[in-house]
Length: 233
Image (tube, rainbow, N blue to C red; front, side):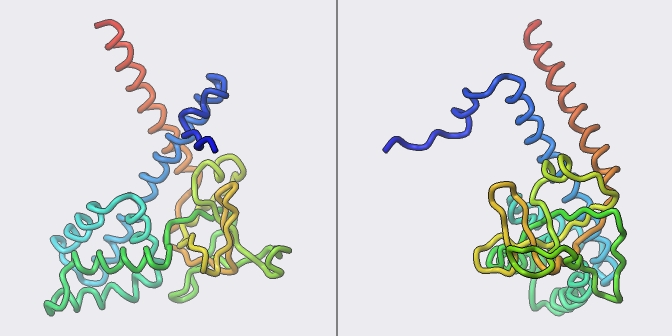
Protein backbone atom coordinates (compact mmCIF):
# COMPACT_ATOMS: atom_id res chain seq x y z
CA UNK A 1 0.00 0.00 0.00
CA UNK A 2 1.29 3.45 -0.90
CA UNK A 3 2.50 5.46 2.06
CA UNK A 4 0.62 8.54 3.24
CA UNK A 5 1.67 11.86 1.81
CA UNK A 6 3.03 14.46 4.16
CA UNK A 7 1.13 17.73 4.66
CA UNK A 8 3.36 19.66 2.25
CA UNK A 9 2.50 17.29 -0.58
CA UNK A 10 -1.22 17.78 -0.04
CA UNK A 11 -0.91 21.52 -0.63
CA UNK A 12 -0.45 20.71 -4.30
CA UNK A 13 -4.22 20.18 -4.52
CA UNK A 14 -4.94 23.69 -3.20
CA UNK A 15 -4.86 27.00 -5.02
CA UNK A 16 -2.55 29.77 -3.84
CA UNK A 17 -5.33 31.61 -2.04
CA UNK A 18 -6.20 28.54 0.08
CA UNK A 19 -2.54 27.85 0.81
CA UNK A 20 -2.10 31.45 1.97
CA UNK A 21 -5.18 31.13 4.22
CA UNK A 22 -3.89 27.90 5.80
CA UNK A 23 -0.45 29.44 6.38
CA UNK A 24 -1.97 32.55 7.97
CA UNK A 25 -4.17 30.44 10.29
CA UNK A 26 -1.18 28.38 11.42
CA UNK A 27 0.84 31.53 12.03
CA UNK A 28 -1.98 33.12 14.04
CA UNK A 29 -2.35 29.93 16.10
CA UNK A 30 1.36 30.14 16.91
CA UNK A 31 1.14 33.85 17.82
CA UNK A 32 -1.94 33.21 19.98
CA UNK A 33 -0.20 30.39 21.86
CA UNK A 34 2.83 32.58 22.57
CA UNK A 35 0.71 35.52 23.78
CA UNK A 36 -1.45 33.35 26.04
CA UNK A 37 1.51 31.46 27.52
CA UNK A 38 3.26 34.76 28.29
CA UNK A 39 0.12 35.98 30.07
CA UNK A 40 -0.13 32.79 32.12
CA UNK A 41 3.57 32.84 33.03
CA UNK A 42 3.05 36.39 34.35
CA UNK A 43 0.09 35.23 36.46
CA UNK A 44 2.10 32.15 37.53
CA UNK A 45 4.94 34.42 38.70
CA UNK A 46 2.56 36.73 40.57
CA UNK A 47 1.11 33.76 42.44
CA UNK A 48 4.64 32.58 43.30
CA UNK A 49 5.39 36.04 44.69
CA UNK A 50 2.16 36.01 46.71
CA UNK A 51 3.21 32.62 48.13
CA UNK A 52 6.46 34.16 49.38
CA UNK A 53 9.02 33.23 46.72
CA UNK A 54 11.94 35.64 46.23
CA UNK A 55 12.65 37.29 42.87
CA UNK A 56 15.63 35.04 42.11
CA UNK A 57 13.52 31.96 42.88
CA UNK A 58 10.74 33.18 40.58
CA UNK A 59 13.31 33.82 37.85
CA UNK A 60 14.55 30.25 38.32
CA UNK A 61 10.99 28.93 37.90
CA UNK A 62 10.64 30.90 34.66
CA UNK A 63 14.03 29.65 33.47
CA UNK A 64 13.16 26.01 34.17
CA UNK A 65 9.76 26.32 32.47
CA UNK A 66 11.39 28.04 29.49
CA UNK A 67 13.79 25.10 29.06
CA UNK A 68 10.87 22.77 28.24
CA UNK A 69 9.36 22.15 24.81
CA UNK A 70 6.06 23.81 23.91
CA UNK A 71 3.83 20.85 24.82
CA UNK A 72 5.56 20.48 28.19
CA UNK A 73 5.21 24.20 28.88
CA UNK A 74 1.47 24.00 28.19
CA UNK A 75 1.24 21.04 30.58
CA UNK A 76 3.04 22.90 33.37
CA UNK A 77 1.03 26.09 32.86
CA UNK A 78 -2.25 24.15 32.90
CA UNK A 79 -2.32 24.25 36.71
CA UNK A 80 -5.71 25.76 37.65
CA UNK A 81 -5.48 28.96 39.65
CA UNK A 82 -7.03 27.38 42.75
CA UNK A 83 -4.28 24.73 42.76
CA UNK A 84 -1.55 27.34 42.29
CA UNK A 85 -2.83 29.20 45.35
CA UNK A 86 -2.99 25.96 47.32
CA UNK A 87 0.26 24.30 46.21
CA UNK A 88 2.75 27.15 45.82
CA UNK A 89 3.23 27.68 49.60
CA UNK A 90 4.04 23.94 49.86
CA UNK A 91 6.60 24.29 47.06
CA UNK A 92 8.16 27.23 48.90
CA UNK A 93 8.54 25.18 52.08
CA UNK A 94 10.15 22.30 50.14
CA UNK A 95 12.63 24.66 48.46
CA UNK A 96 13.51 26.58 51.61
CA UNK A 97 14.08 23.47 53.72
CA UNK A 98 16.26 21.93 51.01
CA UNK A 99 13.96 18.99 50.27
CA UNK A 100 13.65 19.88 46.58
CA UNK A 101 15.13 22.25 44.05
CA UNK A 102 13.00 24.40 41.77
CA UNK A 103 14.28 22.36 38.83
CA UNK A 104 13.01 19.17 40.49
CA UNK A 105 9.61 20.72 41.22
CA UNK A 106 9.14 21.88 37.62
CA UNK A 107 10.16 18.43 36.34
CA UNK A 108 7.65 16.77 38.67
CA UNK A 109 4.87 19.12 37.55
CA UNK A 110 5.76 18.42 33.93
CA UNK A 111 5.83 14.65 34.45
CA UNK A 112 2.48 14.71 36.24
CA UNK A 113 0.97 16.79 33.43
CA UNK A 114 2.30 14.31 30.87
CA UNK A 115 0.87 11.34 32.78
CA UNK A 116 -2.54 13.03 33.04
CA UNK A 117 -2.44 14.43 29.46
CA UNK A 118 -2.95 17.99 30.72
CA UNK A 119 -2.71 20.89 28.32
CA UNK A 120 -4.26 24.32 27.75
CA UNK A 121 -7.76 24.64 26.33
CA UNK A 122 -9.83 27.72 25.49
CA UNK A 123 -13.43 28.36 26.53
CA UNK A 124 -15.23 31.55 25.52
CA UNK A 125 -18.25 33.24 27.08
CA UNK A 126 -20.13 36.53 27.07
CA UNK A 127 -20.64 36.13 30.81
CA UNK A 128 -17.92 36.64 33.38
CA UNK A 129 -17.31 33.55 35.50
CA UNK A 130 -16.71 34.69 39.06
CA UNK A 131 -14.49 32.93 41.57
CA UNK A 132 -16.38 31.06 44.29
CA UNK A 133 -14.05 31.30 47.28
CA UNK A 134 -11.04 29.32 45.98
CA UNK A 135 -13.01 27.47 43.29
CA UNK A 136 -12.98 28.83 39.75
CA UNK A 137 -14.50 26.52 37.16
CA UNK A 138 -16.62 26.50 34.03
CA UNK A 139 -19.76 24.44 34.66
CA UNK A 140 -21.43 22.61 31.80
CA UNK A 141 -24.70 24.30 30.79
CA UNK A 142 -25.64 22.54 27.55
CA UNK A 143 -27.14 19.06 27.48
CA UNK A 144 -25.08 16.92 25.11
CA UNK A 145 -27.00 13.98 23.67
CA UNK A 146 -23.77 12.05 23.15
CA UNK A 147 -23.04 12.05 26.88
CA UNK A 148 -26.59 12.51 28.25
CA UNK A 149 -25.41 15.24 30.61
CA UNK A 150 -24.62 18.94 30.59
CA UNK A 151 -21.20 19.74 29.21
CA UNK A 152 -18.85 22.72 28.80
CA UNK A 153 -16.92 23.06 25.56
CA UNK A 154 -13.43 24.23 24.69
CA UNK A 155 -11.09 24.50 21.74
CA UNK A 156 -7.49 23.39 21.60
CA UNK A 157 -6.52 26.11 19.12
CA UNK A 158 -7.17 29.74 18.21
CA UNK A 159 -8.58 29.16 14.74
CA UNK A 160 -11.74 27.49 16.07
CA UNK A 161 -12.40 30.36 18.48
CA UNK A 162 -11.79 33.07 15.89
CA UNK A 163 -14.00 31.41 13.24
CA UNK A 164 -16.99 30.53 15.37
CA UNK A 165 -17.20 32.84 18.38
CA UNK A 166 -17.41 36.56 19.06
CA UNK A 167 -17.51 36.52 22.83
CA UNK A 168 -16.00 38.86 25.38
CA UNK A 169 -14.22 36.55 27.80
CA UNK A 170 -11.56 33.98 27.04
CA UNK A 171 -11.06 31.40 29.77
CA UNK A 172 -7.90 29.34 29.56
CA UNK A 173 -8.78 26.01 31.12
CA UNK A 174 -6.99 22.77 31.99
CA UNK A 175 -7.82 20.31 29.23
CA UNK A 176 -7.12 16.59 29.10
CA UNK A 177 -6.39 14.92 25.78
CA UNK A 178 -5.77 11.32 26.83
CA UNK A 179 -8.04 8.39 26.00
CA UNK A 180 -8.81 7.47 29.61
CA UNK A 181 -10.06 10.80 30.99
CA UNK A 182 -13.43 12.40 31.74
CA UNK A 183 -12.84 14.75 28.82
CA UNK A 184 -14.37 13.89 25.46
CA UNK A 185 -12.68 15.05 22.28
CA UNK A 186 -13.79 15.55 18.71
CA UNK A 187 -10.55 14.99 16.85
CA UNK A 188 -12.02 16.18 13.54
CA UNK A 189 -12.11 19.81 14.61
CA UNK A 190 -10.01 20.03 17.78
CA UNK A 191 -12.89 20.62 20.20
CA UNK A 192 -13.19 19.06 23.64
CA UNK A 193 -15.88 18.90 26.32
CA UNK A 194 -16.32 17.97 29.97
CA UNK A 195 -18.89 18.55 32.70
CA UNK A 196 -16.59 21.03 34.47
CA UNK A 197 -13.44 22.84 33.34
CA UNK A 198 -10.94 24.18 35.92
CA UNK A 199 -9.92 27.74 34.99
CA UNK A 200 -6.25 28.62 34.66
CA UNK A 201 -6.57 32.26 33.58
CA UNK A 202 -9.03 34.82 32.23
CA UNK A 203 -8.35 37.14 29.28
CA UNK A 204 -10.25 39.72 27.25
CA UNK A 205 -10.88 37.99 23.91
CA UNK A 206 -11.16 41.26 21.97
CA UNK A 207 -7.76 42.39 23.24
CA UNK A 208 -6.18 39.04 22.38
CA UNK A 209 -7.68 39.13 18.87
CA UNK A 210 -6.24 42.61 18.33
CA UNK A 211 -2.83 41.57 19.64
CA UNK A 212 -2.76 38.51 17.37
CA UNK A 213 -3.61 40.65 14.33
CA UNK A 214 -1.06 43.33 15.25
CA UNK A 215 1.76 40.81 15.69
CA UNK A 216 0.75 38.93 12.52
CA UNK A 217 0.73 42.12 10.42
CA UNK A 218 4.08 43.21 11.85
CA UNK A 219 5.72 39.83 11.17
CA UNK A 220 4.23 39.69 7.66
CA UNK A 221 5.53 43.17 6.89
CA UNK A 222 9.00 42.22 8.12
CA UNK A 223 8.97 39.07 5.96
CA UNK A 224 7.81 41.01 2.88
CA UNK A 225 10.53 43.62 3.39
CA UNK A 226 13.14 40.87 3.80
CA UNK A 227 12.02 39.25 0.52
CA UNK A 228 12.23 42.60 -1.27
CA UNK A 229 15.74 43.23 0.08
CA UNK A 230 16.92 39.81 -1.08
CA UNK A 231 15.36 40.32 -4.52
CA UNK A 232 17.07 43.69 -4.88
CA UNK A 233 20.47 42.36 -3.84
